[in-house]
Image (cartoon, rainbow, N blue to C red):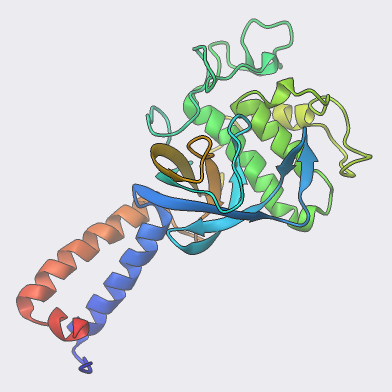
Length: 268
């Protein structure tokens, strides 16, 4: 390999490395593989509840599952759309759809249904938008990740709250939605309690940025269904806009440096 000392060469290398990070954060699509769960996970209605581990395009990743309907198994992989939790409103390629419809992926929790006898105080009269729903889930994901190693024992209740916001987790057969997990998980609050807390963050604009990986049904290895939707942390101070801008910069730099003949030595 030839040694490149030109400032253009170093710039090209930096841009290409940056583009790799951009593709890791928000690349449009990605291949997700689920490998294992944390040894600190709790259990919510028979499901592991806490931190999952796997890969994104072959790179190690930490996941939080927001999907209570679809089951997955160790080693299973699938293609997924990649979005930012900060900007899902109106997106057709994420799984959950907010209020205002019927079907598996619309909100059906009576506590989050306008007009229901059980509706929480503070629920918008028109129900929750898709973005508001993902804001609530994002807040719950943040709480779970902030509680290192499930020290407070509430991972099961946080996960139950996520699943009770996103789909049918509130209607589980073990009573976990409104009963303490003190015997099984050592938690201090119920899933229902955390759903109500999350509702207070439906319009929160200061939430962390997460990648949202949503199965797109195009490919799934070892699947009985097409996979689960995951939230995953992204590099600190990274944003969806940063990713797109850097990727565009990388493309422009690639064209310019190729014409200048600078990029060729880097690739030899």
